Amino acid sequence: MGGMVFTVMAALAEMELAIKRERIVDSVGKRRAAGKHLGGRRPRFTESQVLNARRLVNAGESATQVARDLSMSRATLYRRISELGS
Image 1: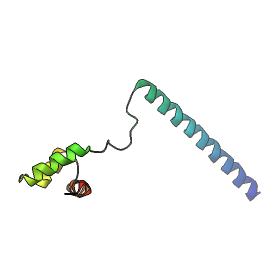
Image 2: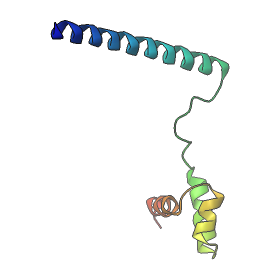
Image 3: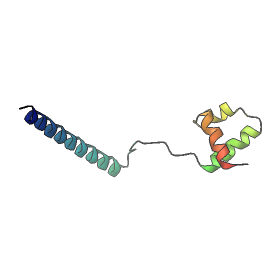
């Protein structure tokens, strides 16, 4: 009897997952067709933005303020500057 209950519960969970997946796929399709934002990570910062930030920091501007102006963390700013090299 317990095996049957488990099987029925598993089947219901699988059906619910399939319905949820279908709703998500439909929603993404509609949003994509309408040209709306799909979410996800923000676009990465361009190399020119990082070069300008490095120029500002080298000119004496506070790294904290430069990072805040670019809406990134100070650690990300330092990491991106070091990735570019000298």
